[in-house]
Length: 92
Image 1 (spheres, helix red, strand yellow):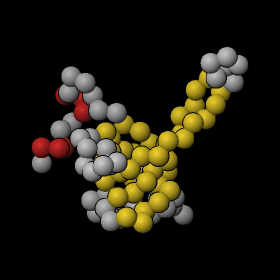
Image 2 (image 1 turned 60 degrees about the horizontal axis):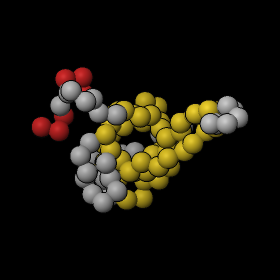
Image 3 (image 1 turned 90 degrees about the vertical axis):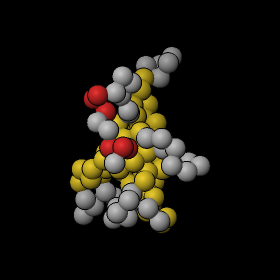
Image 4 (image 1 turned 45 degrees about the vertical axis):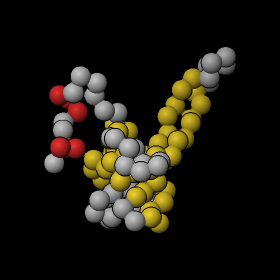
């Protein structure tokens, strides 16, 4: 499959993020919350920012609470721009 090109061989590597599945109510799509920590511009306190990514899950086997690794890809739908790379940890 042409979409499975390794990220290392690309001139501009695809982004990879790790996050927690917060919703799996759609067919072949999951919503993953990714938390990034950055210092506040003025006060330098570390602030956690959460962003939601719509992820393509071809096997439709993700459950809420799973920790997953996702990779950037071409637009698959209006909001879906990420695909599942691996499940790091299953929900307990």
